[in-house]
Image 1 (cartoon, rainbow, N blue to C red):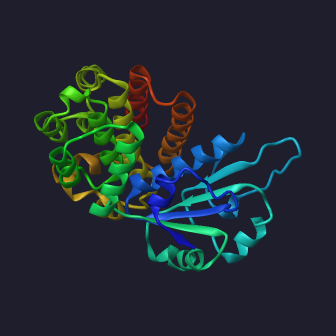
Image 2 (cartoon, rainbow, N blue to C red):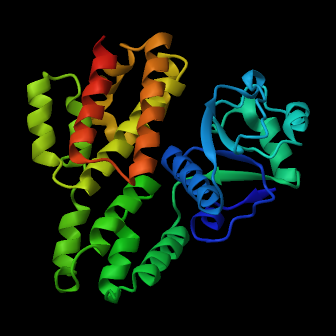
Length: 312
């Protein structure tokens, strides 16, 4: 059956009867956030492990009396169909499949939408109504009072892409109440391409230059995590694009000035390097979830590893 992303994001309860999730749409940062939230909800209820699978065709059941059940995350819907789902339906494990919209997954999306016991979650840029619901939830949870002027400024000006929306909300709600003014909020909201995101676009410079830029822009754990989500977003686009044409089509329009840089980075990748990059992302995700975030030094190490893979 089809459910809304906010049903996962804003509800504390988890329907533990559901074992199969398909996250689709075209907003990759929201898709990843939903996956992260699902994993955290399961981990709060039980001792559970996560594991990556390339496709459902390559899945091998390694059930054991002494193993905890697992969450399997697949970034490719190849082979995902009613027959294969039936084969693993009796397992207690959870499967989260993540793939952007395409004609190739249209039939399986239709199957998920019409079937009981599975969830289809389509992720698109946040609507005004969605922003209101999320902001209200954050304000109530943090028990923060903000003026109507600031409230509607946030609704109008915050980014529609979830990772950037969430990052800015976090910074604003962390302000001491006496600093929560229209002027200060506007300053935070104008920190865009010239801020944290810019660090990634210096990836091909010399290491000492990257380190200097990193130290200038990254001054808190919130900055580190924001940069990581930017990097992960760009890395996943590289990994998931089959050719340069596909990659060009998914470069966000607002990055038109960085298009040549992004294409230059993409051209340095082959299948082998994409696999190495995917392993780096997976290991970093484990560290991030285990430690509740990345430290400033671990963020820099991650960035330099991405560069090393890129130019190798």
